[in-house]
Length: 370
Image (cartoon, rainbow, N blue to C red; front, side):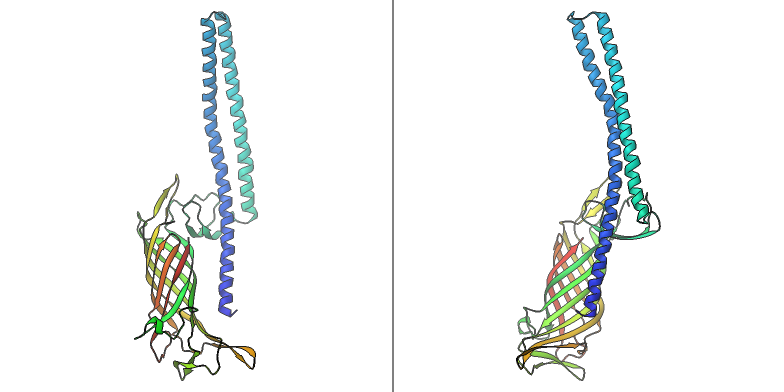
């Protein structure tokens, strides 16, 4: 595993740990909100208690009046029974409300204190916090937040910027002047690309989420598998193809880029309204992105596998092929939900001094895990 790959793996592991921490904090927040929710239900129960007991009293008085009408009891007995029923209803209301008040006090004492204790123990009661991860609503969006931590910080009413992890893979090749892809010196099968990155998505207009700006950073690995036992040769800066001296098992070339992509994304979304906040969700919605990318090449390598004297050998040639240092191109995607058809095309030449002009092109699937 080369240095760049190790850095990428370290970055993704760190990002996953931050995400887990963020989700833990969100779960704590949800528990805190559940305490409030349970208390609000108990407050409503207090109002219901009086209504229920009065309803029961009304039925008892109606039954007593019927007994009086049927001459089963005297007027004096009816009056005493009504007073006894009223007294019992009043005591029931008092006792039931007292029980509910004790339940509320128990929740306030233990529910809030348990949450506040955990916040204090983990050092999250003040200072600043950096959070990346899933959102606190059911819109299936993710978010990024950097700011002052407050134990009573209200939920943000409107969040215009969300974040997600981008992963893409598929076929990779080059477009060469005057040649079809079938005539390419690189195999269609075996030549592929992988892209892994992080993106921010910002709603452009205040009152509609139809237009969004999506931007971030990505690592791109573009791999080419050479045909006909050919390999790349650097002759005084000129890059050309020659036949390898032995019958090679496999010859591959890979360019690794770090780019900043930017897309204008548009498509419908669902507005989710809540009592104290709202969100726009693009979950399972049609999404179209048009844009491009620019960045730097951070490495290249040609790998040749062959047998010599019955022994398997491997030759690696790193950064020897005058790859274009500055990379830029056009890209776009068409998605339904989280899966998209993805195309990207390098406007820069693959090599600085090419015997034959060629530009990298990739077609595949893109997953925006938002």
